[in-house]
Structures are given as C-alpha cells and as structure tokens.
Image 1: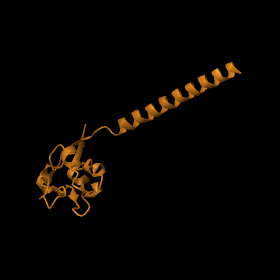
Image 2: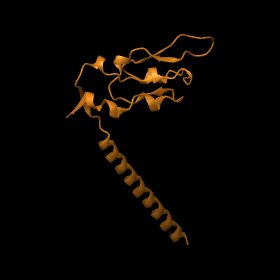
Image 3: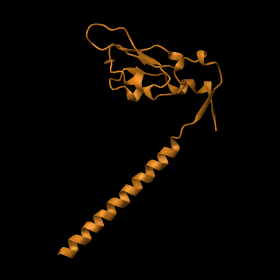
Image 4: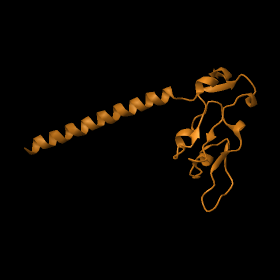
Length: 127
C-alpha cells in the first residue's frame, strides 16, 4: 500500500513537471510570435491621427496610463473638487503609431484607440 502511494505521488509529480514544461514551451513560442516589430513611418508623424482618447465620464483618475506610457502622452486634467483629476491626452503626437499598450492597462476602460487596420498604410515593418 505504501509503495502504491509512493508510485502514485511520483507519477503525479512527473505529470505536473510535464504539464509545466509544455506550458513553458507554449509561452516561449507565443513570446517569439509577439516579438516587437520595428516600424518606420512613411509620412510625417503629425499627419497621422493615431492617439488615444480618454472618456472623462469613465476615467477614475488613477493615473496608471500616465505612469505606464513612457512617451508621456497622458497628464492629469484640471482638479475638480476632492476627486482625483481625470486624465487627458496632452501630447497626442508623442503616441507611438500602432501602440496599444495603454488601452488594456486602463482599469476603468476609459481609453479608446483608433482601429489599427486603418493606420497600417502609414507604416512599414523593418527587420
């Protein structure tokens, strides 16, 4: 009986190791697919209307977008009362064309972006 339990535990442990290995390999392949592609703009950046829009009625003023966005697209708006200021898009031309990283970061769901398909014509992918 003791030997059966020991064998069963070893079998479970091995099964778990195999599952973890497979999951790790799947994520590695997914990471390879998601490697950053370098973009080259085909027109002047100011001619491309790619930037986020913040819905002030939904924004909770947490500021995660400002912290997360390295190019500095977002800043807090005007303080109204005791609530945190709503975030605004103060530097839209700083937004990297086809970047969508801020949208899923917004916990309130206040950030919307244009459809990427509409802007593919402005960029060229380079190796």
